[in-house]
Amino acid sequence: MSRFLFVTDLHINTVCAVRTGNPLADVLQKLRWCVDKANELDATLLLGGDIFDKATVPYEAVNGVMDVLSECRYTALCVWGNHDMLYRADENAKRCALYTLGASGTVGFMDNTVVSYPDCYVGGQLPLETRDKPQLLVYHGFLEQKDGRFTVSVSDLVGCSSPALVLLGHDHVEYADYVVNDHITVVRPGSLFRNRRVSTSDRVPKAVYVEVENGSIRHSLLEVSVARSASDIFSVSGSMPESVTSSDPSIMSYDTLLELLRNSSGGEDLSFMDALRMVAPDDVVSYCEGILGAASVQKKGK
Image (tube, rainbow, N blue to C red; front, side):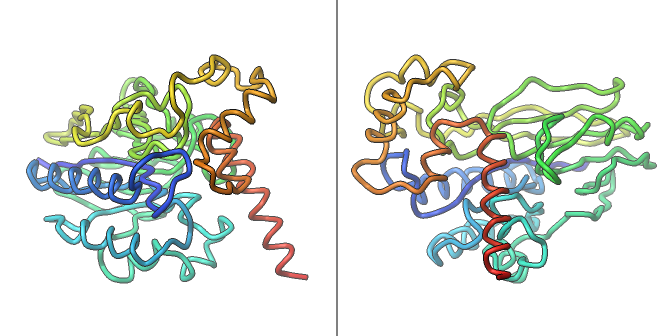
């Protein structure tokens, strides 16, 4: 039997404007729980991207992650997320914190490759191909929601006729399983780190435990028991404004938005992207990150 534990979107950094306490200590505690659980289950830890909140983070964050992941029984495998990349450009990899994890042997990268296990294959390649064993696809992307390379379409999956489990990062929201042609299941557990104060943040972060044996794939969700409650971690006091909990963020009034940002900042200056992450859907945040990244590249080229 081959066993795996999948988590995604850790967004590790030393700061997070919307949270109380020590965000680095919080996320490292959850990562340590994942490592301990993977070791307990004799499983390989799989990371679905956005391990770091930015391409470059303080050494304290990088070293903290290396210390925790070094305790994995089996080397953790990961794919790159948009936050891990500088301007979303592969050629900038050596300027990124995640590259350091790979170069040190702390993690192995499975973007655009496939790793063979006794009972299955694990990889990060699209489109999904038919194989002689079941396979796990680990990818950082929205399902059927355009965001450049960080998108997975059903058309990327339907060409596969063998059993497959698709484990997606990028989307911070937990969804019910999505089944394609009866033998492909898409799982989106949501982010391990809740860095946005929206209604979907009022949840317990989860990991996905996977067993593959005799040609079949089984999976279940495990609550990360050390995660703090939403009412405890967010710096906005009291209940959220009704407009923030609405499924349509566009109805938030200007005054409500200013009040939310003012209360969330704790008196500190916020960057545009920090403020946007508090109130905007993932696709809007991701789109703006891409635009700002492209603008920065263009500016550097002048």
